[in-house]
Length: 337
Image (cartoon, rainbow, N blue to C red; front, side, top):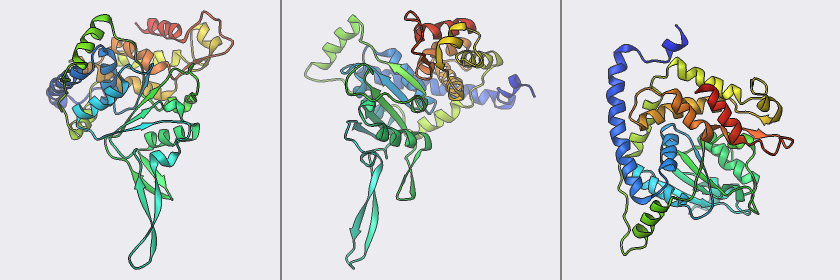
């Protein structure tokens, strides 16, 4: 069987998938509308975050303080029906403060035993606020939980709730008191989403909506079980050979070892690994469904190139001053468009 044929579901199930995707599209439209009641002027951030959650991944939100990142996580917890917790990362935060620890209990009979006290990571939607202000040891503890979906304390493994998603915020690395995440840890995040200032009209609407006597509150539009069902459905969405080849060409073109572009070969320190290909495959499907389409296109791959690749690549220190990572990714996108 060819790769193209293998990427599509059997014909007998095609009609079922169409109906399921259409139903999911209706539910996601309701989710968008409810989030939009609380978060104004950040439609691209909302869409990219929903794409990540539908893909079953974790989000890294990068932006200056005060742009609504914490509000977004709080709103998502309400609208998606997920339990949520927030951890403020600081330099003195320890791994046990996130994962939990064992405490010694003494029973009525005088016997002593250890009891595990779960940390805030035992939730469905965890906001790791200013993750790059914590030490690398604490960062690694959270990122290991993200990858393995479980926590090991005292030699005993404790599974995390499902679904489990981390939305981490990061201050720009130029600010003081930050510990940049190593590239191997950044790779655990499906998308890196840049949060920017809202436009004039959105900021005006925000002022009117948030400073009055009553603030608009979003309502629940989905449940945890429905979100997991949606994530399973996304993996069944068909992907054509053209999109598959575009993903491979884009990702392999960003690696110095396999690149055709001279700037990538000479000035990129490291390129995206296989997780980038997997992220593009899932996120392209989710973006198509979010847009009301059954089949993803090359345009979906191009639209997701920056948020998926920019934290999985880095330029060498010797790269020319006029060369930027964004420019390199733009050229890679041109090659598949």
